[in-house]
Length: 299
Ligand SMILES: *[C@@H]1O[C@H](CO)[C@@H](O)[C@H](O)[C@H]1NC(C)=O
Ligand SMILES: *[C@@H]1O[C@H](CO)[C@@H](O)[C@H](O)[C@H]1NC(C)=O
Image 1: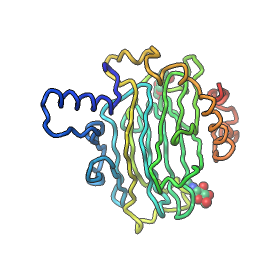
Image 2: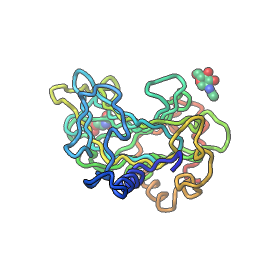
Image 3: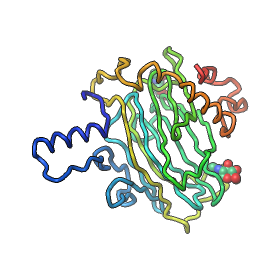
Image 4: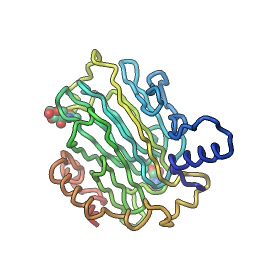
């Protein structure tokens, strides 16, 4: 178990131990509660849970949004959660779901972002991803989804090892971000990250470039979460054993260094049908494209 967390099995194991040792008479709840893994970052009173504690809600109103973060940080692994986004008229509202080395926008942070950009009723949500290394981002991609993310829960996941970072929606790889095997200034692999989510007002830029403003009469805006799942290398100082590439863990093994054949087919479909914006094709913004743009996602 040392230095490595697989949240559910760990809890089940502990529950089994407690039951076996007669410490608990009632059946222990096998599911993790919010406070086992997370802290609220701000506005505790905009956070609620379902009665069984397994679904969490973040609310945004005119006063404030709300956010949470993991208690632990990780370097490499698989990170997944199910989200259901704000429905109806949600223009201007952004739900962010991301990994970051710190709670804040510090000048040397690493960050992996999923951002969900709300829209007017009946208009499509867009999903934006971004990668920061040492405070530098500007690596946006925007995609359409093939479903309405406000209707049901879908999983949004990140696979992160020293070879690639893959952003998944359900089982579909949406974006593949490669390392080049050398010291570089684009691939975050040196610092552990926490997982965060928050909901906030971004009507100065989010929807149609800021033209569509948040309609506060429709608030509060609520995003929902469940099924947090991490299988990764949990950080401990000075560093945990699992952080050096040992290939002990599936997310660090050869198979996880590139897409499988079936993932490549899904990824090709995404490339053909869902990409709205790719900074690696934005020659106006980057007359000389950033170095990572020459790395092939198919390798
Ligand atoms: C990270 O950024 C800081 C501030 O921008 C800079 O001083 C530092 O040299 C950078 N570190 C690396 C490893 O590139
Ligand atoms: C919102 O809907 C409009 C109209 O269909 C579309 O152009 C836009 O890309 C959508 N998403 C955002 C985030 O603006």
